[in-house]
Amino acid sequence: MIRMKNYRRAMTLVDLLMSTVVLTLLALTLIPALSTMRDEAENEQSKANLMQIGQGRDQYAGDNTDLIFAYSWRAGETYTLPNGQTRVPSSDQEAAAEQNREILMRRTGRISGVTKILSFSARLPHRRYTHLILLDYLAGADDEQFQTTTLAIDPADQTLLTWHERPLEYGPGSGIPYADGVLNGYDSDSNWPTTAVRQRWAFGSSYEITPFAWQGDGPSNVYVPVSSTPHLHSASGNPELGRRTMSEIASPSRKVHLYEEFDREQKRYPWFAYDHARVEKLMFDGSINSLPSGEAGDSYSPNNPNSVWRQRYVPLDQFPIPLGGFNDSTDLNLRFRWTRNGLQGIDY
Image (cartoon, rainbow, N blue to C red; front, side, top):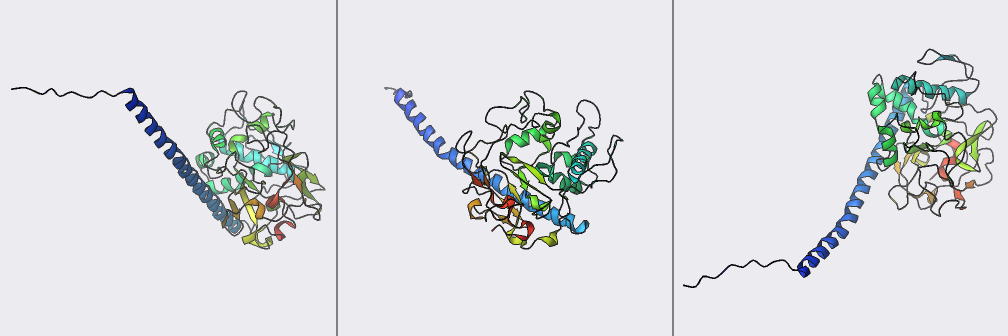
């Protein structure tokens, strides 16, 4: 009887190459699909964040005589910080800076030592930190909830999420904006590298708040845009801050309140002012607007409501660069940031 031997066929080099090609093609097919699914999930979560902020805004207004949440401390009043120091601010801007400091001191317990929350008087806190007023209100007596919530952060904003998780890391090498000084091509204002500014990035937001939600409609006694940088405002006259109410909004469904600073679902993360950017926007009626920025009305400086306001985008350190690269001179229409006629105007 002859026995047949059972031979196993060894994998040849051709087989190995074919297997590699098939796996590579599968990966090339699946990776974009997975990336798209991730982007869609993050976008839906960002919408959910904005909707929850809108609900909190309405609740805040109901408990605070219809006020839109904003810094409420006033010039000439006496206030006490958690470390026992008293302050009598000379302007509403200074008062807001002290209120910002009080909230962060009280909520974090950083009232002394090397990580003490420092004075922020050189900056207008409304630009990036008005949301702290709402988070302070929503957290109640729960300091941990205030510190850990990511409600004000776009899930696609991984850099801010990292800073948020490491609030005590803001020195050289930390990755915080301007921790290693001012770099070529980025906004070069001298206050960015200061410790008081750097230690606050961990408490920032991915969402910007329109200026008219915390200041008057103009044309006098308002903050106005600065031509050299889109990140700072300049006072024209003596602005009164934090006195706006929900009832002052002429068309809540057509007026933007908060918006994503960057469209992180598109390539290279276009800044909100690029016409093709489709940043998610919370309207004053609580709805979410995903229309392109270019479909919104023109922007106007509050003190010059007869001339369309345009300016180029200059990036902050660690933030997306202009689509045309550093020193891109393209003038952009800032749309819903500076609505003509303020809360009496419309955006869409």
